[in-house]
Structures are given as C-alpha cells and as structure tokens.
Amino acid sequence: MTYHVIYDGNCNLCVTLVQFLENFDQGQQFQYIPMQNEAELNRFGITSTDCKQGMILIDDNHPQRRWQGSDAAEEIGNLLPAGNLFVSAYRALPGLKWTGDRVYEQVRDHRYQWFGQRSSTYNSAYPSCESCQKN
Image 1 (cartoon, one colour):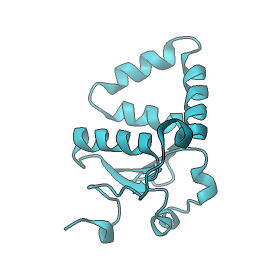
Image 2 (cartoon, rainbow, N blue to C red; image 1 turned 120 degrees about the horizontal axis):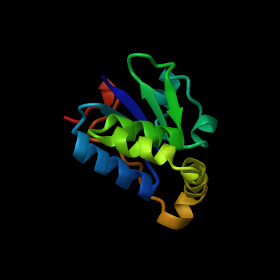
Image 3 (cartoon, helix red, strand yellow; image 1 turned 135 degrees about the vertical axis):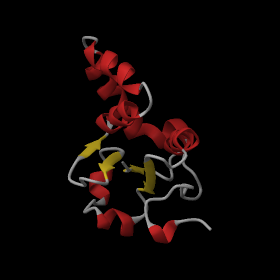
Image 4 (cartoon, helix red, strand yellow; image 1 turned 90 degrees about the horizontal axis):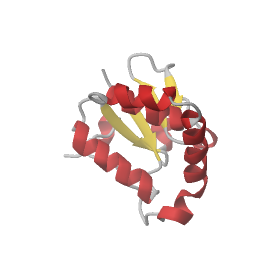
C-alpha cells in the first residue's frame, strides 16, 4: 500500500523528518510531495490554503482517506513497524493527545522562525509523481 506525504519542502525541520522517513522506509510505503509542487497538489484537489494546516497524508488506494497535521504524523507512526504500539499508548494517556496537537500547531506555525527556511525546495528521492522521478 502506498501513501503520499505532503510536506513543506522549504522547512528545515520538515525536510529533516522526511529524510529520516526516506532512509527508514526506502520508498516502500511512502512517496513525497512538497507543498510547493502545485501541479501535484492539484492532482489531489489540495490548495495552498489546505497546506497551512500542516502536513497531509493520503492513502493512494482510497485518496479520499486523508489525515492532516498531528493526525497525519500519528498515522505515519501507525504504519511503521511496531509504531502502532507507541501511537496507541500516546493516544491512551490522558491529555497527551491534546497536548501533542497543541505542540504540533505551535511548531507548524513557527517552523521557519525556530528551525529555519531552506533556500531551495527539497524534492524527495521517492517522489509521488512519475515526472518527478530522479534518473
């Protein structure tokens, strides 16, 4: 099963996390689209306004199944080997999910100030679109 991860390709933190996931997954489950790739976003009916709410995860088999923000991060965790154990524990501890959602919002809204902005958009080694594939 394939999932599309829509991330901010200009955010240092976002790119670091995508690179970590790329190294771990090697393109087996996840393909990546930077939020700056409007042509690919249009393919999924996603606008730049939608992207302001954070990263987006899309199930390729059922594109209407989408997660955004901290929910996307949790679903990515669920999809990783044994990740569901950690995500289930995180969701089960009283107040932790709520706190995690608030932390995600703060990081999302201040990511450039806190972690810096790249001078060019990062394009994954495992892009979502055929025309984006590196040779």
